[in-house]
Image (cartoon, rainbow, N blue to C red; front, side, top):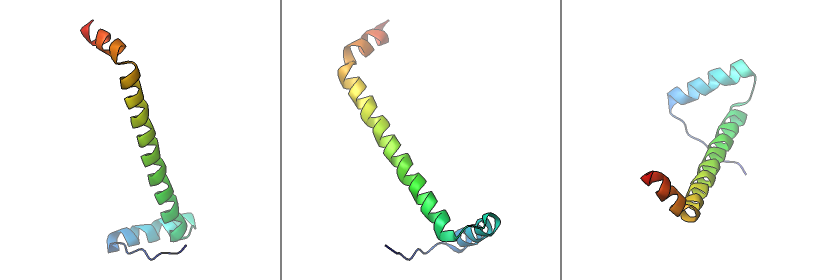
Length: 68
């Protein structure tokens, strides 16, 4: 699916420079940036779920360690 992306002038110019240096279309650079953003959010959510699981299942051990 296609979309129109409006960027501030400074970001557009910086993206133009990188696109030229890497001989890569701006759309490919933006798609990769979005992919990385989504992956980071997914990993952060996974870490948060793991932390919540550990707190829930190991609360007693964590509390004993805190009191040690």
